[in-house]
Image: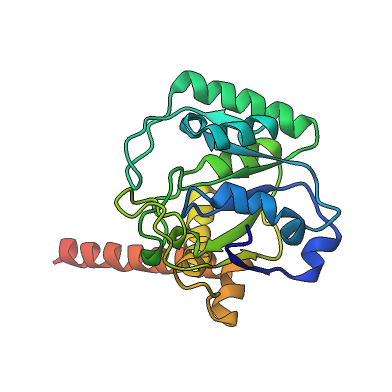
Length: 246
């Protein structure tokens, strides 16, 4: 992609000892898949494991993406073409086929990549769209940790909004590979962490400040959120008890 100025941010330790993982990335453009593949060696290192990406079967209507996805042996999932930014509607039969193909790929030693937003985000500058639990489900099923990638800038080369489309307004893009894969306790912990960390980079092209980023990556921020919820709940219960005792 000579038309783009590409920047990859990754810690050296991520490249030296790759472990089996479920890779997750934000979805900001129809170019995402192409750039993830083109930058794969820089993002995951020369010792990276083979990878299969889950993709929307509707991409096969484009002969270029159809050829790319099929030649790479990627895994399709069929869902309604109901517009970017709207809730995903999966075809149940296709979803079962996708799960079967994913299980076989994991068994054969592949890493799996998935875009938890499902469809391209027309407003990445405002953060992520709703994050679906598929990545957490696959991680739990395969007993693998999740590792995060964030993309920034590609929507300015090919925008999800059809009214803007391929009107290129900038040539700079960045990919951020976050250190340390992680096993999440539940889907909400994953979606909250992914939204906070990857959503910020997708919107601004830079990380959260170092302290906040580390708190999200090591799980401390989520534990703090759970404690806050528990304290709020206890306060509400105390108020109810006081009212009932009067």
